[in-house]
Length: 403
Picture: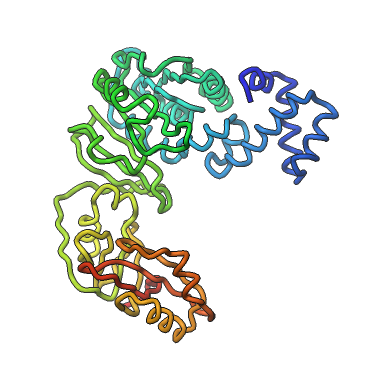
């Protein structure tokens, strides 16, 4: 979809075509039948644009919920857009920081410069938190879509979106710089900050000229790219690590893990976890805590110890409920051997397994086939390394009646 086709969707005729496309797809029509039905009343170009947008809205429901019904997307923009829950969490932190720039509304949040704004996932959350947002993106189509999304959600009064080069933006007059550099190139997603667009040195130059900043980055960002004195926060949503944010100019640096939707947060306490033998329970820390190197802090929460000093599995003889870790009861521990593991599962009548691994080189899918499972019971298999030796732990999810 090009810029002209998208602008056509914003006209009365375009909105009518889009409404029709949404209804046709909701009724279960396949793409060919939907296009044939639409072309009876609309030009081919408008038909294609409306059906594309209607399909994207259906996909977007999983991420944006009811808002998806009035928003606009591109395939790449939808994929890269921040989940509203994560964006709202960041916006709430920004507002709570009480940083101000000239012209900020009384009772509202700080003025924000949002560079690389995309379709507007973050700027919408910022505006909903009361922050006036000036947004910049290099792609004219994306800019037009972000404007349309702000209008559709009644936020235009707080949002100004323009086409521009992030590298040329001046963050000085704003209370905060928000940057979400593109992490996808011609070969797909990139994990190297030097391949971001704009590149990491350009992003850091913007940060250096901003009174405060929040940078959205991939969860796997190497620690050496985190600026000295910054706070790095890893965010997990319903058990899945979604992204990381680097904060400067707001509060002391350090490492933080946050769980959504609860909002629970964990910071470095200086805890040190000892190692010891496998106990009755095994804890698998949330990925945000693992990324933030806060496994020792999680171990302290459950009075636990590490199986191996370099692997993020915690064991304890106590069952402690915490949202920071999944807990399993260990039923058997064995040095890893395919033959022995297969025999143990056959003896238990296990036909369904969940396989988890850390510090193991075993190919999980190959192992699943080689086990040749049959039976009605289920089991959790944890593959790990203890003192350089491979082990398999047979487990079951811990219940409140254990112990």
